[in-house]
Amino acid sequence: MLKNLKITHNKFAIGVTTFLRDEALYILLDSILKYYSDTKIYIADQSGDVSPFKQTLYQGLQNIGHEIYFLDKDCGISYARRYLLQNSQEPLLVFMQDDFIVTENTDLHLMADFLNNNLDIAIVGGTVLPGVKGSYPLYKMFKLDDKIIYMPLEYLLKIQATSWQQYENINFIQTDIMPDFTMWRKELYETFDINVKTIEHSHTYLRAKERNLKIVYIPTVAIKHSHKQNNEEYDKFRKRRIDVEYLKNYWGITDFIKLDLNSIATIAEKVSTLDNWDTFLEPFIITANLATEPSTNIEDIKKNLASAVSDESVPATTILDFLKEATSILDFWLLKDTCFYAIKYKNVAMKKNLYLGVANEQTSQKLLKLQADKYSNLQLFITIEPHRATKSISVQDLRLKVHMPVITYLKSLNTNE
Image (cartoon, rainbow, N blue to C red; front, side, top):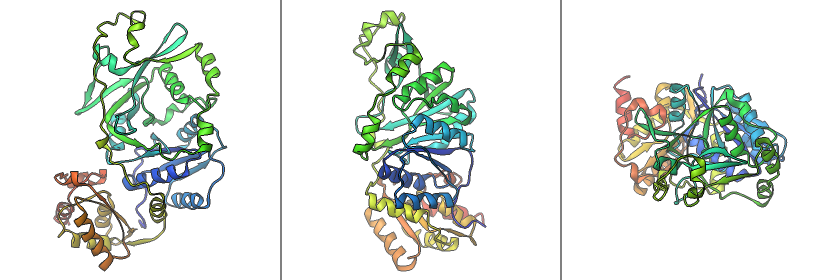
């Protein structure tokens, strides 16, 4: 019997590495459970001490099928990610830093489908949004004399040394290094060098290039990078550069050089026969409106998490009754697949949490009043999403957690009963 809404697929899993940033971790986990509560989470915690709240949270996550690993303090992100790949059961694992925030544009299903249908691709990644200025840059990497050179992909696009490709109307491009939001095949765990604790990002992707692994970037799959939860102890470890000499010896170089568009001309002749560097393609920018900034009130986040991993549940019929009565309010949208399971398993207890998106504050207040008056045993989480007011998606897509009008959803399923 399905007591709670638990992990329901094994196409891919989420791998989280965390180190000394508990509040950032809570925000990330809250966003994962909002959009991907049916997906298994593996957490590698190298923080050392564990607070009472985090211990309770971890126990709750384990109770509903997720895995927590306590690693040695400061073992390094490369060690932690290698460990997660080796110990995960799923064929694909998407890595998330503990200060990421999952949003409606974090389409992990698209990433998994891309890898499953393009077996020559080893790693697929998306956009990391640091704010209104756009996304992190992409680079091609190569060795020139005794240096590792990073060539901006914008430049190579301009001179047609590389180009965008399409797969089922999805734009993608092959790169050598990309932002740190990527989905990996499980068997690639040896790409991560456990001897490296800092500057691990470049080293890992150079090792991937050395192994001839194909890496693809899909710009429309986006995740937020908050940068707000750093602290003194974390910064003390993160800002070290203890691996510089190790990496120089490993690659037989004296320096790493990242070129900006203004400095390319100084070495272009030596790199190849590249020309026409007098004009450049405007850097492709993924605008910040792709991912709205969710609430990061830490007390609210902790309450949400405590509720999400609790054993409390309600009959599925109660959720269905609430939705049927709420269909008189026509402008709200589902953010979760709880309702699908409520209808499929009418006689089974479900998680009491409902996540709904609404078009305006008035709708939000009406729903909250209905919940308070007649369905107080339900936990209702609401976000205001006016830009969704005209979107309508077919019912069979609901399990992919897309937005759709509730009234259409109920009518479609009721006709099949």
